[in-house]
Length: 231
Image (cartoon, rainbow, N blue to C red; front, side):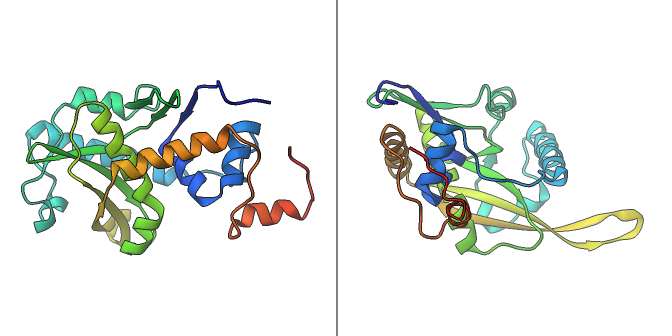
């Protein structure tokens, strides 16, 4: 099967999979063979929905929510165009970057967007059982934020060169089942050229033969036990 003339559409999460294991990525996109996954927990999805409502309430007031009162957010504002943001939060209508050289598309769905000095900052909420570390945040989410920065540039919004993650981690249950959360902002530098190059490398790989797996990929190690041939 040839993939040379196929227009490919990828997401930031697909590029994260590509970085994690080229073989799993190729099988997912070209053979529709996906990694095993458990039941998707409903709580993070519910938290994401409520956090968006929380931020939208303050957006309508032209203010930042109280958890963003720290010095790291000085001079920052929430993106004001609520209608456009709502459109960009949907995978079907999210922002796109069209790379005509390789006839492929990168698309995504934002959580939120910040503005500082006329520059735009991708902003993503995360829920986690305990506070994160900068190293883990960079390892798992730098590609995502860089892709969002590229998508913003492609839609006329100049990148600030960094993005923010805002982690919500539960630390206490009080009366009547109320849960208090620790809020942890993490700033991550972004490079849109690195995102563009990663996207092109991923597309090139999909148009070629099945690659070797990452040595650290536990899914490929599990699959090798069954000696299943893929060509």
